[in-house]
Structures are given as structure tokens and as C-alpha cells.
Image 1: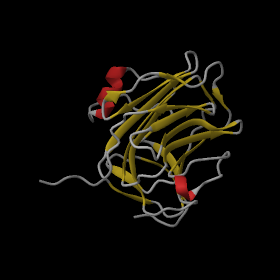
Image 2: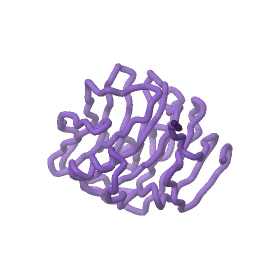
Image 3: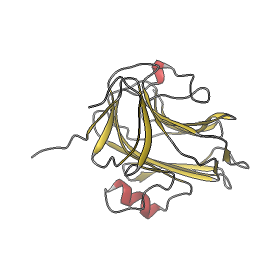
Length: 217
């Protein structure tokens, strides 16, 4: 178990989870990538929390945009936001159940400007966010904290208290079938930007790397 430390490694995390055990404006995991140009994005992850307030699920910032790609749960019941290039779209009617593992995927394409959310295998409406420019620059990606500036500007009231696992990111919009394969824990193409099975990350503050809890019968 790891906590209260700075940790940097390329690691096979299958069957693992990050646990964020308390509300802070410091504790987070930074996910490292050398990629600096994205014309499209898909992010998939699994999360578990009992929070009913605002909280972040995934935050990617560049020097030009703090919310270059953001996945954010709003306090309003069943409302999730996707932001791309600092422009957000709200997705209503999401069955965001507390105290259970949720599978979440979000997509965005710069050509059409459309974003879409998938929650536990169910697609949302496709909504416009931002078009005409790629995500460019040195990307800082954080779990557990929402960036209001490049690599910082954290707010404890937007932090995640809970667990995250199975984080993948692709530089293209994943097909519906591939998203379903991820959601159903089947064999799928791992992320070519972030791959949970070979993840380069740093733990900062009180975050634990643990075995993912399984239901025993």
C-alpha cells in the first residue's frame, strides 16, 4: 500500500485501483504522456464514490486551456459535464449511482466539435463543445483533482473521494463496439495514449494504490 508519498513508475495495473480517501486540495495522481497534439479523444475509466457534490473524474490541462479535456460530475442529480478546449456541454439524465462501480467513457472530435458520454453501456445524446482547433501543448493529466490552471489551481470542493480504476485514453473516437467491449470487461484495444496495463504515473499526497475490491460469493 502506498500513501503520503511521491511515486513514479511505469506499471501494469490490471486488477488495481487508486483510492482517494479524503477531501483535499493536494492529493492526486498525475498521468504522464509525451503526446502534445490531439484532434480527437476518448477517455474511459471506472469510478466509485458516495459524493453528491461536484467532483472531477478526469482532468487534462495544457498551457492554453485548463479544461482542454475534462470529465466532471455536477452536483445536480444525474448531470455530467464534458469540456473540450474550455467549452463544456452538460449531459442530463445520467444514472450516476452512488456506492457502486460505474463505467464511464467520453469522446470528442475536433472536426465536428461533438462530444458524447457513455455510462454503464448507455450512450448520451451527441452535443457540441468546441471545434476548429486541436488540443495542443504539454498535457498534464490528473485524477482526483480538477485543474483550474496548468498543473494546479486545485479546489478541495471539486476533489474526488472514492476510487478509480481501468483508465484508458485514445487519440481517436472509439467505435461503439469497442466502447461496449470496454464496458463489459471484454477484450478491447487498450488506450494508445494512456494504458492502464502500462501506465506512467506519479502519486502525490495521500492516494493509495490497492487491489481492486471484488465481490465474493
